[in-house]
Image 1: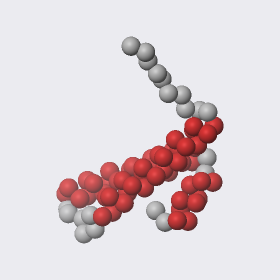
Image 2: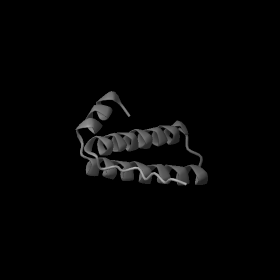
Image 3: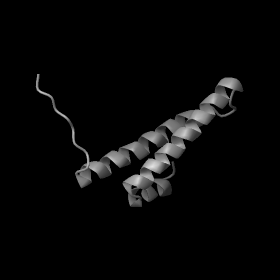
Image 4: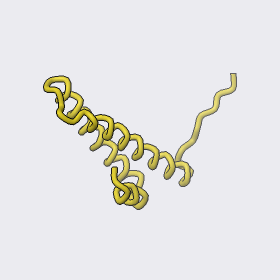
Length: 77
């Protein structure tokens, strides 16, 4: 993910980020299947896709925490 793409993530809403994460996950699954059937020439693309998914998920979590939409359940045993 390029610097401009990371800056664009900052401007997106949580819903838009979730759609972006879903697209990246679908692309990753497709690439992984393709790699298992026919070895990919560029296996770094799998690593890059995994990292991009993590970046989007991190931004989602940051926005949810900032908006107070995320509640961690704490159980006392």
